[in-house]
Length: 373
Image (cartoon, rainbow, N blue to C red; front, top):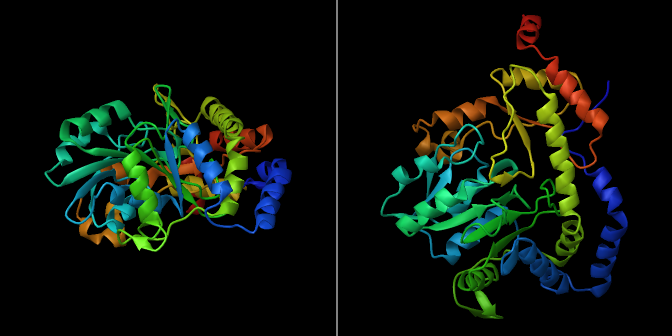
C-alpha cells in the first residue's frame, strides 16, 4: 500500500542541502554560537521581509508572544482577548505574562476570531487583542484595529502559521502593533530546531523586548528588570536565512497544492476551507471539516494517507484551563469535533495530491460505519 505522510521535509532539504551545510560549517568554523553576525543578518532580513523596522530573535513562538505582552507592560490584573480555536500556546503566553485570557468565538468560514464578537468581551481590564493568523491566513485586521483604536488597546499578531501571508496587500508582521512568529521545523519558514521572533515597527517595544529576553539587561550585568533568557542562536539563524530566500517559492508551491485540493475535492460530506477575498493564504495547513471526522481519518489512514487534527480540544475545554470549562462556545467546539488537516508539503507530487483527492471523493461515511458494525 502506498504511503503519503502528513508532512515531509526531504525534497526541500535536499534542494537546500549545500546551502544548509555551508551555513553550518560557517557557524561551526567561526566558533561564535550566540548573538553573532548570523542572528543580526537574519533579524535584518526578516524585518525587511515583514515590512517592519525591527526583528528580535527569540526561543520560540510562545515566548515571542509573552515578550510582546511584557514589553507593553501587560500582566497581573490585565485581560487579553484571543480566539478560543487555536493552539494552546496563544493562551499560555498570556498566562505566563500574568494576564488573563478572554476567549472569543471563531467564525466558521475561515476559522478565525470573529471581529463582531470582540467588543462585547472588552472590559476596563482589557489591554490587548491577539489576532491568531491561523492555518495561514489573516483575521479581518481593519475591523480589529478599528475596535482596538476605539478602546485604546494593543493588537498583537500571533503569526506563527502565516509567514508571508498578506491582508489587502500588506504582509503579516506589519498589520498590528507587533507580531510573534514561530520557526518550529514544521512551519512554512521552519528552522532545524526551535526558535521564534518578535517583529514590530515600535522602537520602544523593540528595545524592551530585547532587554527582557536578555535577562532584563541592555548592558551586560546591568539588569533593569527581572527578565528571562530567550534567544535565537547563530546556527538556527543561519539556517533560517537560507530558507527565507526560498520562502516565496515554497509558498507558491503550497498555494498550488491547495488550489488542486479546492478544485478537485467534490464530496458533499466535506466542507472545504475558504480563502478570504482580502487575503493571500499561505496554506500552512489545509483544514477540511466533516461530521464523521474520526471515521474519515481512519478511512484515509487505512488508505495510506496521514492526517492530523488541528485542534481537537478548544482552550476552554483543556485541563490546563479548567476554570473555563463551563464556558459554552459552540463554534469552537464544533471546529474541534470536525476539523481535519490533509497532507500538504513542499515536494508533494501531483500523483500524491490526486491520490488524496480520489480517496476523499470516494469516501462514504455510511459505508465506513456499516463496515464497523
